[in-house]
Length: 424
Image 1 (cartoon, rainbow, N blue to C red):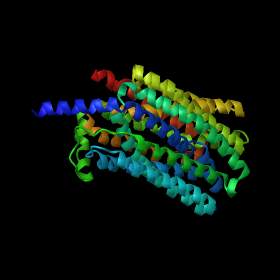
Image 2 (image 1 turned 90 degrees about the vertical axis):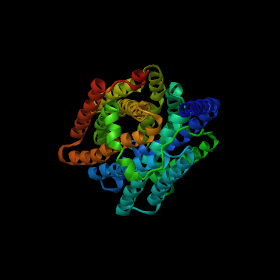
Image 3 (image 1 turned 60 degrees about the horizontal axis):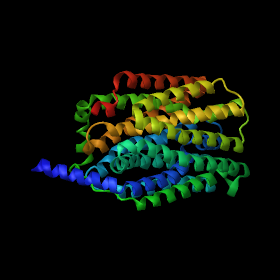
Image 4 (image 1 turned 30 degrees about the vertical axis):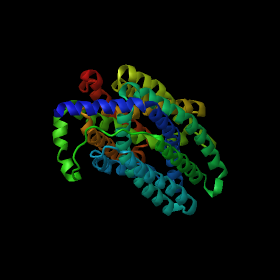
């Protein structure tokens, strides 16, 4: 009797998913178009690293520390995010709270830039990036779980690809405009003006989610304390060895992000970089990061996110190698395009492959674990990169990052079967 009731509840849930698919598809596209546009200005390896380099007086350690603070926040909060939603039949209200808190931090970056300079400005960047990362870590759990609920896996790749591609067009344009804002020093601080634009765009994106229809989950876990849930982690890892190996491989490959804040700093040692050039490089990076997602999404729907994970890592590593032998703005634009495409595919695959392991009721915890491991690498990596850059130069940073990426790639290639095909 219980099994029959459970089956009926699941059937009703799937019927609601299909009934509201077009509406939810459109809401996710709009949210991605505006939200991704704004957040890419913050996460791109251009504006924040260049700004920190400027206000710190050229400190490589400060550039690495800025991203390390963001990753520290992202490392600390995913498990909290999971504990907030896994007992709820609807999680969108939590998404609004967490998403709103993220956007407040972007506004803080802008206001601190307008009112502070020197050391106070640098400390403000560390503070707001840390809090931004904290809420971003929670959002990664909430929204990945939400998309797994309302968008079926057979069309998910195309949605993500189209969403990121649309966001790419606007992000590239805004990035180019942001470069010009820096050149003219709008409102006395072009960087702060760019962050303010990011705040407005992301806030509009969050509002678009009010049009979404989220069905109630047919089964949820009991509400338990975070400490008690953490005690379930070893059993979950033992029960799914393939997920455990992916969890470790993704963390290894994510160490490759240690080099990301230093791409534009290294380029600045090879050529003169104006605000306009910085905007063009940002445009190339975000165009590739989002535009390539159309291809990555099609590959994922046809062959699985595991293949996307492997191919994108190869492209990312190859582009980093090319950066070491590149001079001139045109060649650097091509390198940034390759880096954006590779990193975009890696992030898409890493975030979505985890959705295909195990059962739905444990999905928030799996997302949280995977994101925590990934962001722990994101804390260690940039700090290590800053020390390496000061001691041995930027090429040592890039070679170390490539070595970690290669370890993650071969771990997935040899040890992690495709969960979609395995379950099928």
